[in-house]
Image (cartoon, rainbow over all chains, first blue to last red; front, side, top):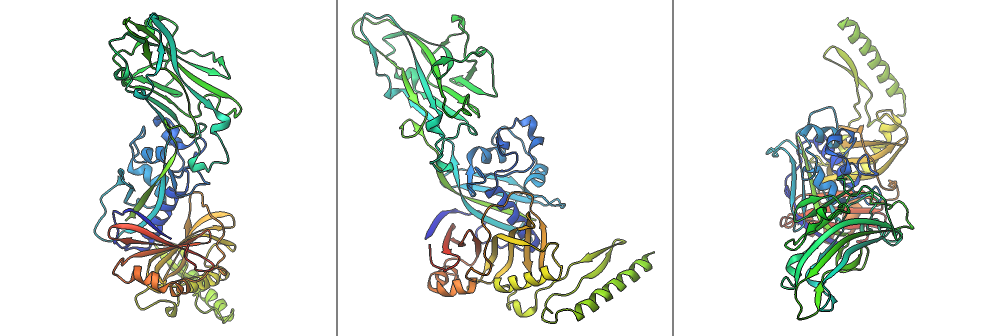
Length: 330
Length: 200
């Protein structure tokens, strides 16, 4: 079988020093096949202020899936996330050895970005290793409201209290029969849902007001008691058109005006609530109130129950993209 | 003090050399410990050099010879452990016969991950600070690179004869040989069963 992969950055360049080659080899294998340490939850979920807790880098999704990389680890490793790693960090946690090696580490994603760390490669006198692999793209749900402005009430109705909800049936999601690289894993990865084109999908001439009053968690049908009006940025990130909010109090003063808002984003950091209880269900409910002004025809509005799982066209399930990792050491 | 240190070193060297001469005469490839002195301190330099007949004219090394030297190096104590289990083997810059400039490997030595490398200077060991996945490679059960290349000569020579790529690596792990090469700016790989040499 011939596997066609993306262009390599240093293709054709020959490693010149044997010891450097060995160090480059070790670094490439550790990065490509090791999940790093800590691994459960992974180092990539540490706060940036806790980066000293990282014992070893590794970009692999898990020890059971060598050469399949975690997207979050990759972006974190190459300083595209919360961390700001220094050359010293890379030496201590990925290259190792008592010598302060110079290095260049790059990762090319097919039809995607190229990530770099380190210094420009010299013309000669360096060790080099390249490895082929795959990167797993993190799942997410994307709701294009243009497809879901389909709920209706009759012409005489002046307001509706409704909502948009996302259901996490953990027993279905954490399905051990699905290979780990294709499995949605709310225990160790974030869950995101993005509601797009909200206001632009409304019949604005018909809707006089639309407000998101609050977001609430329900476990197995019961409201989860929490201090919802506090920012809990280590567990979730809720934003409307890029502005962050809490999940809201019961006070109307906290309502968020959606009449001119297009993008509603809710990101849950791992482990998502109750995901360790495999037989439980979590429902994230966004309560929305519409008021209608027109009186010539029935009113339409956006609402719906969405399942965060497999087989739904609005869920981008995990998929794999070829990558080339190249390591130069001198 | 310096003179005394050197003197002690010479005695050790002579003793080791004599032991080597009276040992198993079938293993002359490996050379004995050669103590050396540097910056005022004495250390033991491990010299288990690869014999010339295992090195090609352009300095490449074959894997079968590497395994032979490895066994001798372990038996003669040139490597720090006795029980090694290869998990991944990489040959760097292979030629058309499967000979490589150098061989590096990830292995378990008495349960601990280590990095091994084989050059014209023989085998040496370094640490492997991380997990090492993969099953044990049956070094006696796998097909040797020159056999693999011979069996698939048409396919491999097409790739490595310079018209497609002049640089390729060879890797063995989990019962699979993988040849990675560049083709017009792209990286490609060929995969073979490591026991039969059949294309996968």
